[in-house]
Length: 493
Image (tube, rainbow, N blue to C red; front, side):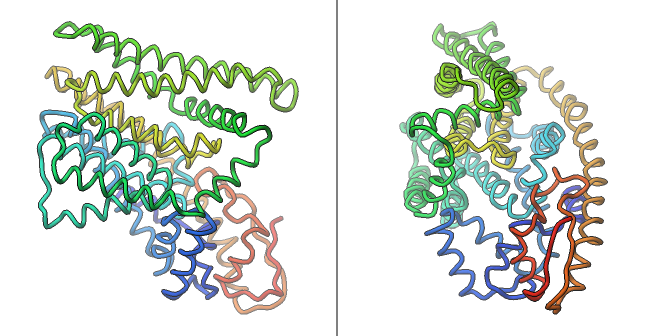
């Protein structure tokens, strides 16, 4: 938490942060309860059907000082949720290295992809739309697994837990569909072991999903994104799935490889295996490899075609459908393999995989390739690997000791390296924002004529919202926040 706080010392509002708090029309981002409710109603009916933006407004309402205190708590709880869910895959819940791995997973992921931290963590609107529901979703996986392992929740806390589950669904459509897939996976594979508390949580999740999917704003936003591409509905859907899934595969190829290696290792493991278990493991590994090869072939041909033709190559239909088919086969084969081999790792990897597939649903269907949209699926895929690895390591004590050493050497070093570099880069961004953006805007407060020139880019734009201070799209909201008159012109160089 202290490390996250040290980074958020250099946080600043950017882009839609001003939009969300400015909808009340009052300087300094102030708004009344009526303003907040009206904006939430507009989100539900017109914009996106999410609760997330309403939470952004509440978090930013106290002032710019509050988010740097809120974000470290949110991210630390997310790391603890990852560790707790991973522990549920083991018979021994007292492995310290698992807790270290959970807390270090996000920094290591950001070390590989620093841009995911930019608009997924260090931009308040992005963090509450993606990092917050992700942390809550992983907490739901841990809760469901705890109950499936024979645990229980004090009934006095059940209303709070039900509220947690329903809030997870309501915040964002990615977490909503992911939780729906997790719930279906529990009901299909574990229905013989369902308790009253499990039925209660599953019922709450399904009810919240139905309500969320009825939001008009959700489908209006999805339609705007999907209709932007040419072709028939089927062609647009296939192209969207292929475009987004292949880029996500590029960003997470090492995690896919780790899943395939673990399946092969289990298939070759000497011991009491049924033939069906071995076949399921080999098929899952082969399906993952097939999707990876199809993705590489598609991206190679797509890039070559763009270079040659400055557009989509003509003969891309076979490659597009090959990716769609192999992705579908891999999703099912890996789910079957995780379920068949649950004696090794319990249900956590299966539930995390279900959440991964569900999380990708809207992203793939709309063809989104932004890093913040790919951030939650990447974390869930890492959770699959971590849970599988933690459970396998437990079966041999020497492997468990090696895993502990791997966390210290393999995760801590890149995490510290990322932290140190990011701290410097965030400070440089903050210095530019403070001196060249916030200070001139504050000096223009109350003015009704003149011009304020704001830099269009920052020294490290990948560490915040990419169009953080792009004008004129954010001019209205910057003027509202800093109480600048309409006669003042805000421009980029």
